[in-house]
Image (cartoon, rainbow, N blue to C red; front, side):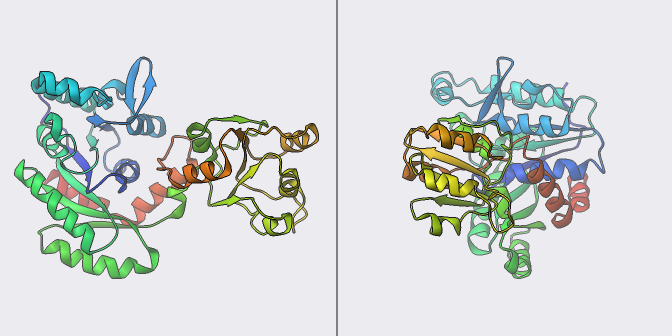
Length: 367
């Protein structure tokens, strides 16, 4: 029998990378004050990890690792949109089967739970090509919706209007909006006028989350996974956060100015004087504490410099790519929160607790 009793909420966004997962991660912690036993499901996923021969959406895997939700992982990620999924669907159009899969997965996730948080994929229309748009999935699950959008006034509200139309067409209620990544010094201004703009559309502003650079900064673990690298030392500081990227193509005197905590140093491996400078004592008398170092062009350092590298406290990688290629890749990275990102996760929890009206969300969900 289809579960229509367990309270549930669907988190959608106006576009990709607006902060759905960040919001969901923080809300799960905040909602536990009201509902100790919470389930989570991402009905349609596009980015996966392989877990025991199952393709599990990265966000489902994250939520389970962080919160230990005691939900069956395959049911938290019932539909995996692999590269050939859409083509197969257009040839067979097995929509009834997909709908049943979503419903059955939700029922299992909701078993003995007080509340279920559902996370969508991108904007309201994503998935329309296989007849499972976010709007339709929310309708299938009989879930009310929160829209997450990036901070601002004009463009976010324009995009909300488009998404609102799709959800309303499917008979889905939007209980409110959360603005994410709002510039700190514009927080009060945007809050005031975004609230007015949303009220004109019959929507309530449920939270305004300030931008935090840390949340969009990659870690050395992510760099290791994205680039083809080998590690030259035994450092396990993979959660070091990268705030600055330094392409060390200057003199040692100029380079030293850029060697500071949070920096990733990208340098050809034959620039041994720069590598030694990074390892030498700074103003505090201690070696400069970078977040990490990438040696490029597949040039292996001399044995003398390798000995220095092995003593460095942060990860040092070697890659065959040149400095420009590495810097471009790092610049273009889409940063996703990972289970090991303890500092980021703690910050997300605090941001949602402080800046989102969770009590109002609970009231409006069960109303």
